[in-house]
Length: 336
Image (cartoon, rainbow, N blue to C red; front, top):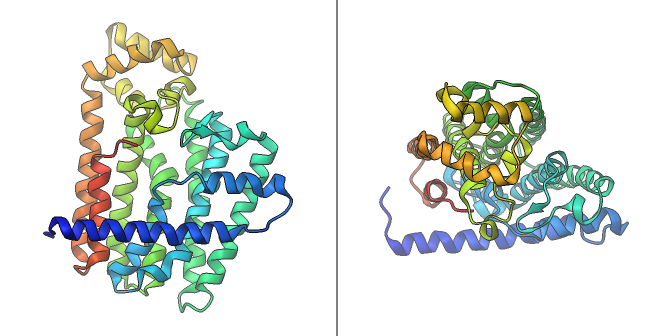
């Protein structure tokens, strides 16, 4: 799908308008809520900004089917609240100190407040979504998908936690986990936008495939950025996955392809000790680089981005479809 520079600029302007509308929904979702100990953390997390990737995908998916993207903003905002709920609870489980360059909610307040605020965010997400789809002929289907998506994301997070106690994780198991933990919410964003526009089965399948590949690319790229991104730009502690002993793409691939020598012993110690100290992070990065694992990860991202874009060929050629294509392009060169 060929587009000139002006068309890209116009789509970027649309993204900006979509973000503004989503932010309006987010601020209204908890406006005037009391007590402050419950709602201040919610305001803190949703006001931190972000690309609003998932709700924008919802709006673009709706538009790609022929619906009005702007009308799906409320559905997208519900998904963004769900996404932020997962971030609050993930940060507690991972003991992460930073999120988007700021103290995480459990650090700024405490774990109890963060857990409770995360819980009420789920209620806010459901309340908003019900209100937005109550008159839709596919309301029950949308609510069912949303509920199953929440369950899948929690199962994916549980698998991630389980991997920390499992010495050996295969690449197949890793990819299955990130499909649940990361890709599923992106898939859900696209499918709800499609259902809101009353898409047919072929269109839903195309968007499902697009979002699945995009979600896998997103998570593998996230693993890359955890090692290589600039700390200030990324807004997280660099090498946090290695400090926590996570079975990231790099560790899983390293265990598969490095069979002997000092590098293999380093990976084995990482697994046995469930992580490495901060001063050993450069050693790990050097190992990954020398064995081609960083290049392999980048190629995996590119491959899934290409597959995502190929899936869009089944959809009508319009600005919604082009917007989804542009998001995939950005994923391939994502730096934060």
